[in-house]
Length: 88
Image (tube, rainbow, N blue to C red; front, side, top):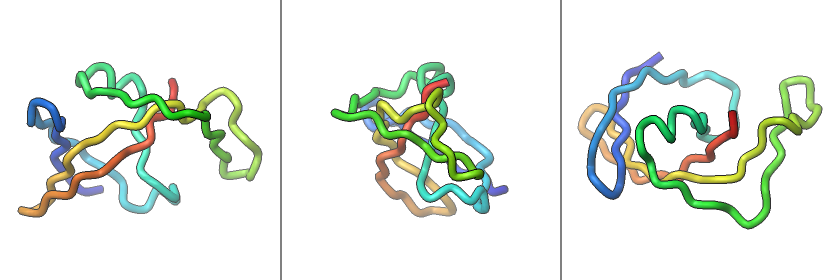
């Protein structure tokens, strides 16, 4: 676990989070509940993406339907990223 700051692109408002580096996920993901609570601007994608569970079966209840553009800050570095949002 490491602490990072996640910043909104539109207002530069930041929140400090603890994130897992070894989650075995192949990309960056954020929950829709957290995204809405923090007021991030959502971008709807054309075609929903189904996520595979660890057991290789598709998780048809939790889709990726939106992405969120954010700034990620860690130890003086800043990176603009687009994070997939999983519906909750």
